[in-house]
Image (tube, rainbow, N blue to C red; front, side, top):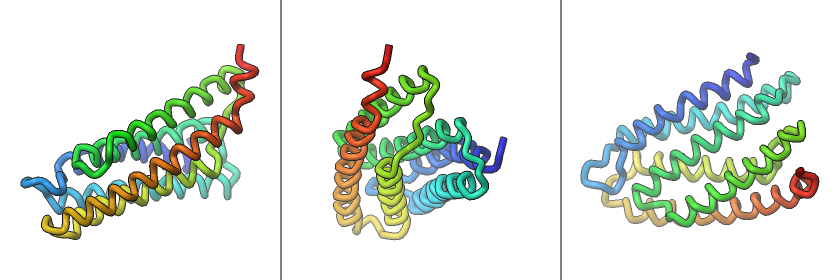
Length: 191
């Protein structure tokens, strides 16, 4: 297994670690922990950085693999979806935002499965990358703010995060429509 794929695997392993800290963070609640939110932010940021680093190394060192094309976006989806679920539990991510993200991810996964049945691997496009970066920055903002700002600033942090989440929903929807349109041939040619 090459280094970019090892970094992707590390991201898979960081997801449950992040989930523990996010679950214990509870920003805006009586038992909120700034330390747990800080640790959630650090782990999520580190995992997000591996996303950048594995792609950079794979392209620079010509180590792009079919495994990486499949596993990298899957690791991203697991990481960001887990974070959005915890943010929804904290009341800063609307269920509609999470539903749009999940619908897009299921649709893209379906296209990839149809393509794979025909022996084709579809890598992420630029819109998928923009969507992922925006999701990651929104999540990092939320957990960093939850670690830095006291409970009496929770209303402002929640408002900013909610606006960012709706922006994530819009970009997610746009990226999904573009992805489906660009890969419509998979459905036309499917048997």
